[in-house]
Amino acid sequence: MPVVRDLRVLLRLRDFRNLLAVRLLSQAADGVYQVALATYVVFSPEKQTSPAAIASAMAVLLLPYSVIGPFAGVLLDRWRRRQVFLYGNLLRAFLACVTGMLIVAQVPDWLFYASALSVTAVNRFVLSGLAASLPRVVGPDQLVTANALSPTAGTLAAVAGGGLAFLVRLLASDSNALVVLLGAGLYLFAALVSLQLAIGLLGPDHPAGRAHPSVTEGVALTVRGMAEGLRHLASRREAARALSAMTMMRFCYGALFVMLLMLCRYSWSDNESDGLALLGVAVGASGAGFFAAAVVTPWAVGRLGPLGWITACSAGAAVLVPALGLFFAPGPMLVAAFVLGLATQGAKIATDTEVQSRVDDDYRGRVFSVYDVLFNVAFVGAAAVASLMLPTDGRSVILILIVSVLYAATAVLLARQERRFT
Image 1 (cartoon, rainbow, N blue to C red):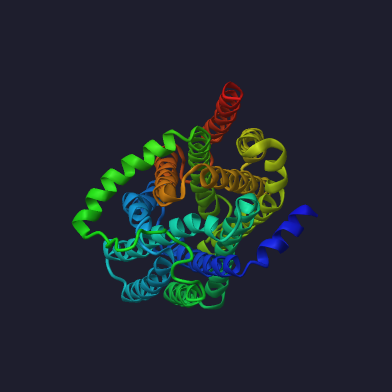
Image 2 (image 1 turned 120 degrees about the vertical axis):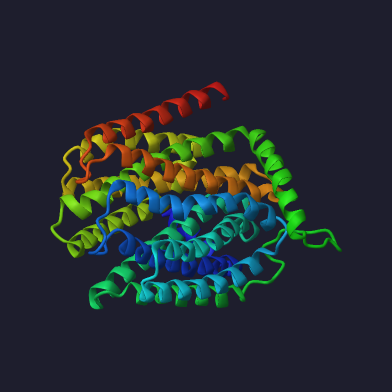
């Protein structure tokens, strides 16, 4: 198969393999850490979780470090990206250990959220740096396949990390702190693997003698750099359209994710353990969709183009979400999780490729930070909307129909714009 042949070519590239290893370990740790947080906030027996509580938790964990996103981009365009991977993962390992101690100590929720926020804040630098570094280790004609393998493999690693966290919780009761410490160990390994990459390999390239900005200079550079990055993105019409469509698809995914959490917790199970096990199966089904997207997307982009494939993914979701979701039964919902995993990840691979290939290297850090901000704001906004519409058991016909209409509108608008500018 052409995809298998292309993957073999990429995996022969030593620097690509090392960058991929950093991603896999980092995102596996993310998966472990996120499951620990989810089980502590949503599936702890002493907590009576509502859609509003889930939305509040997402806002606390996502919105503040969305503000950090622009700063991450500006600094990533000045800092050595390899050093970001090294020191960022070391810092996350330490902060995750702090979170584990706070869980054991049963501190107030605000202190726990502050610790969790500190880990996810550093996450912005690492993930943005990974996306911006990929064009430095593969050729331009290999970007689509690299984007099919690298981010998707990272997502699958996060799913595997989440599965490992579920397994630890099944083997050891009341083990949220132990799961967090497992994540800390994986962050440490990611930092050590990053040492296999040369310091200057991943860029950015700086003129000789340029000094790092001070904190005050960094703030000013952030404001100016974000304006420059947005202007640059606006001049790259295809990348801007792909990013807009992906943001809407992320909103839809977020609303359905909150619905799935409530269904697993209250509608499909009688206790927290069974609900958590169902959520784990659903995450696995979505992960299978991510894997399918990695296989299908290079072929689909080659025939439809990146924007055409995003359109197809959104249109497919518009049809299949109500067809499967309106049963409100575990079986059809698991199929829907697979379909949405394929559609969302397929669109993301195409969007990553479009942004990377259209945006100049000097601006990639800033643009990918904008990308992250839009992702997080869309997800939190979806959680807030879902919290207003969902009953406690998670069954809402209106929400499913609205999500389907948004998917369809995204596909129609993207198709019209593509025809207009071709």
